[in-house]
Length: 157
Length: 303
Image (cartoon, rainbow over all chains, first blue to last red; front, side, top):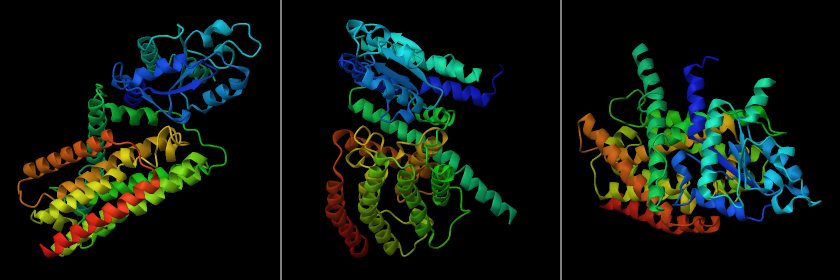
């Protein structure tokens, strides 16, 4: 597909300005504590344009942590749908990938994949802030190139 | 007649209107974010950040919340952008005079008040409880900060005996100008909604304030309004100091220096303070604001 100047500007902007919304789906708070330093003096995500947003309607990237308990299941789906497309989903830590130590529990879904399309997994319990920032940057590049799963679904429609 | 229309369009869209206002406003907002970051020991964003933030929001799909009138949802940000652009076109910057008439200061003040009213309406239109709390706070804050803002401008207007903005730009600098600028700085903190008075848009506290339900293009227009407002308010204070210099380059330099000083002061205050409660902010403006207003009237009329 040949891009004109305007759509090129828009896609570069998507890489330069990834706004982040985080949701805790039953996490032990360990991963959320590791997200906070990404925006603190040591790692400073604002250098790559990342900002924490208070409302999912302003966000581009959804950071999800925790094993998706049955109580948070509907809310995670709701928040994902509130983010205007194009959007990317980054799963933080081992919990949304496999359920981690809670695996097999009857009170969890155990996989974010079952609820929403996840683009990137950041492994670790908890992962390091560098890796989370790296994932935010990679998700922003995916948004630029139209490679996130929500963008692919939109183009298939 | 045609040349007047051309000059009018030029002042609305290019100088000192939409294009320059947006570029300068984005520069000021970036400067603010960078300074705050440096005060906090961070590196901060690069200079193109507000530009890309705006275009990214333009490129996003817009979700209109259920039960919200789509016309009102789109009209409010459009009206606020248009009114600030018209206000910018009235600014007595060097090199244009398409709009200059006796009493244009009053029109300027009215036009700059429109975005605040649109913000308040936007909060109620989107039917979010958080946005409604933000709207209520913005409405109260408007009553508070307009006291020093209007007093400083009226005192200066009485001193130079004109309500024309070009009169402000050609008046000589005295103690009254400096006191008025300081009083305007007091109001500027609340007008730019930075930290001690970031009460209506209180991020995290009331989710995202007034614009919580806004997204995509309408949110981008509100962000653009914010940038244009920044250049209008800072430009207004800058043009109080234009009197003694005559050449265009020197005038531009004066406006730039004044803007940088203002944005530095605003951000050092913002980085050094925490958010006030609305009743404390109101009390601040109705004690220190009144005091500053009285001082500026005495200085302007007696000295």
